[in-house]
Length: 409
Ligand SMILES: [Zn+2]
Image (cartoon, rainbow, N blue to C red):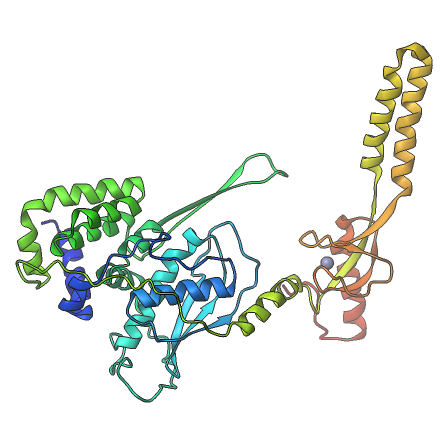
């Protein structure tokens, strides 16, 4: 056995010891699909709460309520999210989580699984001196972030049956194509605190020590991205004949029973979600107020470009009427383009000069409805924004020393 494999098997042994041999053998395998997650997903606090609740049901914590604090500063994203949800502790018997971002369900699942495992570990007393699970009195103390490191949470997740959920989201990539710029933006990250190939091997060792059925083996393989699947299969091949040695190393009996407890797929008990729904409703206003307390400018826009384009179209139509004679058609074309240009010039409107906002403004707006900024004046072009701010700041500094500036961000 290589040093790396020895390390992984030792890691697995610690996780099995924390979970308990009986529970480790009985834990049903959970995959991220409609079979194991029948509750509808939505990119909202309610969706996140229900996904966490279902994860916790799979971890045997059906009756532990889930409380969320909404700390998002952005709308749901199609891109990658890093630590979108963080377990904060057990408070009055409820598992408390902070929500920092909401992404696509397949990008969220592995993070949610790891945070649920952290809640499980806290509840079972793995990360504290005294288990909370069997206490009659609710516990009010939120521990000072007894966070399990990510690799340990992954090993525990594997032993608790959530391995396929975590491993399926271990390698995350996202390609964003923008219309404005030619080219694409590529993002990637790994989740799980261990190299993806180590997680693949850890799953193989888990399969061998638990004497997993063919069905379970297929479920693990199906969850893995291609590279991880190859590594997983290679480890299975290498250790196929050494399952008993592996079992000894993780202190499981040489012939483990293979009975798993059935998945709990009963509907989640109804809970009040009014507060979460309210927070969801307020999110766009909250995240769009990113310039609150700051200065923004009103910039003048003209529909010149649209005007010329319209003129071109009209001009072409006129030019196309060949029977009018070339000179006349050319004259019509020039006139139409000029007309479009002049029409464009004459059509003025105002926008917030902050390029992240660009909300339409009227002359009477004192606060920008798009970003919450205070409209401090009008500029001819967004290029003049910084100069205008500097000018205002210079005036302010001269009159009120110590005044906050708009460029503190
Ligand atoms: Zn604005």
